Length: 146
Image 1 (cartoon, rainbow, N blue to C red):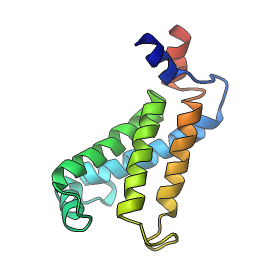
Image 2 (image 1 turned 90 degrees about the vertical axis):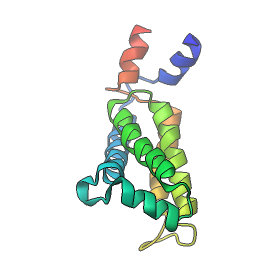
Image 3 (image 1 turned 45 degrees about the horizontal axis):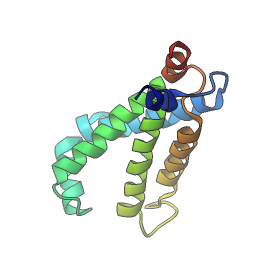
């Protein structure tokens, strides 16, 4: 178990590039999650999101999938901002973006209904999966003490 945890938090402590990815992806994901969960930043809240998931996307039960997606976005985004369990948070975000591409944007690449934004977030997630949290991350701090 200790080896698994060490592999999850292993990162190059002097690598600054993951910091930009973590902060950007984390802020975007946490913001989108807050829209879905709490109705913040012009969002519609959990009940409206659940209705959209069930009625428009066919993801039933809507409330279950809305909680899973919104919670994954919000809490995964916070983990990315902190650089804590970065690889786990990146896998979480990658899965959410794959589902978004397949369910919300399957027929268009460019705006207004395109997948390019979700695809960009997916690419950022995959990059963080390979690099880990990098400099100024909780993972780097934990890795020094492990």
